[in-house]
Length: 421
Image (cartoon, rainbow, N blue to C red; front, side, top):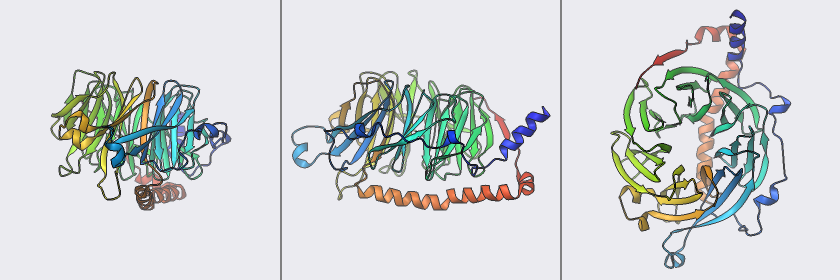
């Protein structure tokens, strides 16, 4: 026991500054470059936004989405045109997760590898392997860093500038299902098959606290302000206060929850909603403060497998539209005007466009087109966030490494709170 304690202590004192081994470095692969630029692709990156889905068939689908002009709108009902831009056989196993950070798209799979793509230049960037010893289940970005979760009970931290592996977060006793980074970038949450939620201090790359859950958490998400977080279970969603980890709202339904997103409405004084996709083909929107059902509609012919949110401007002189992207298990992608849905308008007014990938979709993400000025604003905002938080984290970690004796005095004991909900 003493030996194990010493090993654990040494591991806890490691920082994000450790150097990668050969297995941890980025491996380049240009074999798929031509697939990223198909003959029917548009010559210019003038899309308004792009949707990327991962599938059971190991394929990444890229769909460029354009707002139709007035002439096009008069001929057809949908307001969006959706064109495939790439189809990539990205992995040797089923794709479990896909996400985008800046100009990089990352996908994780049952093959234990993370694939990286430069979506701005439309080419493959390389792959990350050797760290996870199990399926890659979730990928999240914040500023200069990427977090990847796995079946192997761990979360890995990577640096985007050179894609070096930096640190492994260990604490769960089962598969890590989902990770969520706080809006400040200073802490993160993770849920697992071990029926716990762990709070990670990203400033020190250590476990801050661990709370028991009544059952396995499938997905976790922060609200916009970062003062609440929601955990999705099989047939419930519970919203917690950050300050005391107490449940403030419980949302229940007899149909299984398959996906979830927090949404803050701009037209109703920043009112918060929970959007959920279900096994019964239905999309439901809930009041996050009361748990009441606001509206529901059958959006697909099969179960709603995954959803994501994005804002896009139809034109420079118009306000951004909040768009809900929903994908069913049969591969049909639909884009909805979220505020119109909340206003309970008819489907012809809420459905903006759809596209059938004809594949079994498992995950999706979306990002604004790089030719849009909105993207430049987002990049500037991201740079400001990086300057405020993440460099401070690196400095904090370096100081800890230089003064180990002081660090031991300041270490707080991990707190375990057991709650039955």
